[in-house]
Length: 258
Image 1 (cartoon, helix red, strand yellow):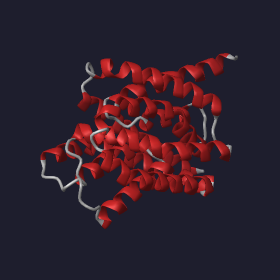
Image 2 (cartoon, rainbow, N blue to C red):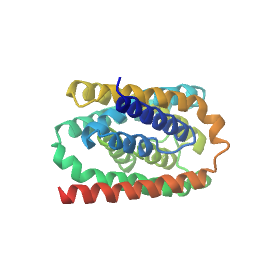
Image 3 (cartoon, rainbow, N blue to C red):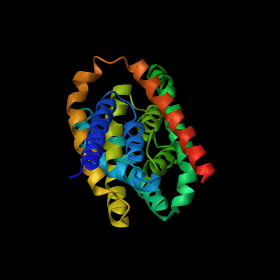
Image 4 (tube, rainbow, N blue to C red):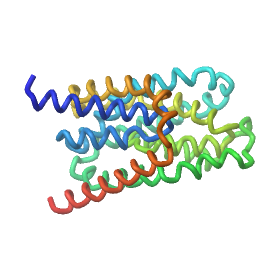
């Protein structure tokens, strides 16, 4: 293995660890993992699908930790899981059939949207203090459309889909932020499995990068609860959002000049 490949693997493992830690603190893992893939030379479309596959392990560990919480909400899972899975699969297929140059032009705005969602997360968190609708009531058209929209976005790009899913779950009856976060972990893990298969078959996944990033994310997920208690969440959120804005501008300028 060359010195450059060792450095590349090291960067991706460290990025995976940081992404895993951020994920346990409720942050957006893709806003760390995706730029790391771009930094080591993976093209935007390949970076997106590689990132999605690499973070499956981190999502699985989050869902496993949430298993006790979601047992109290079987109705929510039965209601939204089929819709979320189908919509996410549709988003993944849309991504695969999107020409690479079109995705290159879209991705700066998606990265920026992820950063904005991260900044808005405290406002979403405060939603738990407001009255909620009855979780046992039949879903409205608006709620169903929101779940479909989040699912499609999750399959197509994904950064910030967890924040969006928490918002929708809180608006449609989840009794607390903690419970909504647990439900989100399980729903998005289920929604990520079929897209991962689509991406693997498409041939866009850079497997060496996915393994390094995924290994780091699993380590970060294990270390996360301990580390997260020692890091100011507000400062971390603002720092990542600012980096996302800078990356979005860089990607936009790069695409515009090409």
